[in-house]
Image 1 (cartoon, rainbow, N blue to C red):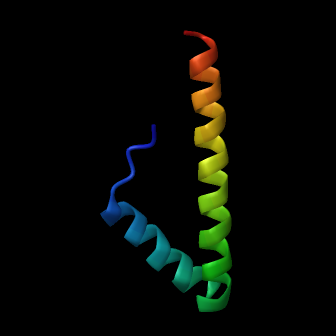
Image 2: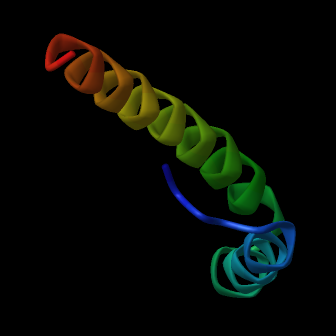
Length: 51
C-alpha cells in the first residue's frame, strides 16, 4: 500500500531523533508503527469488502 523503502524510513527516523530527541523518538516510532498497522488493516478490510 505505502511504497516506503528502508532508506526513506531511516531518513524519517533520523529527522525524528533530531527534532524530538532520542527519548521521544522511540515512543514516536512505536506509535507511528501502530498507526500504520491500523491504517493498513482498515485499507485491507475496505478493499476486501468491494470484492
